[in-house]
Image (cartoon, rainbow, N blue to C red):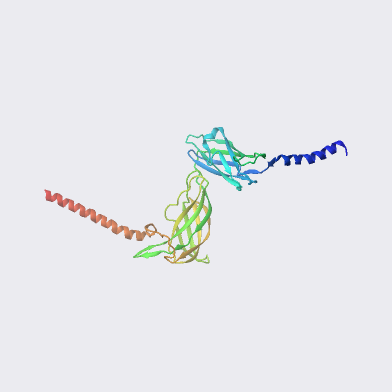
Length: 318
């Protein structure tokens, strides 16, 4: 065996032995982020936008912390990490959320803005054993923002549902219809608060062949703030009796149809559920008039009586 080969063999045995005897270990772990950007091309002045980024690591055996640095000179004051400049990643936790909040000032210029958020992982204080070597990993979040002088009113419908409901009921001569609570998970993709302008239900028999009723929401639907995703509800009256039906719904944004489809609708006998139905707002126009007209008549009669009494007192004084 020549000298070079012999030295190589000796080193191959001695190096592992050296590390074992000295107690030095190395920690290699993967780290990444998703998504790797903060992007919005429809910001307006005075708007606020939030985006969540997941910090993902492969080794969860040790506690770590992520050190956050914002590198965006023109918009440094706009950007805030909601969780703070250091985000802890406890033992056993693989994914930790980081929320980036962008607040556009009222005097922002209408143009594009770029920058970055730098993330570096470090051992959490007191969590590394003596003699251990920690590998610091990092990631870069690209910032691409645009402030525009135009309002965008648009949304996506992420999810829909309709709970069971009681059938309508009659009180004296008044009929109060059943109330369909049609829930919608709305994602506002525009830069102003928005809600569906109208929700229309065409209700068919259980087979979906015979149209029994066409109805739409009563009252306003709560608005979703810009770039937000929230659950809102449309209140829709129905005069149908207890039974199972198929409802074909259409969700509108102005003249545009944002989503349409079929949904099962179960109407139960009145009193089956402890849920409130429609009040005065759900009454038909004729029934509303039948209540309001006598009230107006009483008010007019009261005013007329008050006027006569006042004139009578004045006449007596004379």
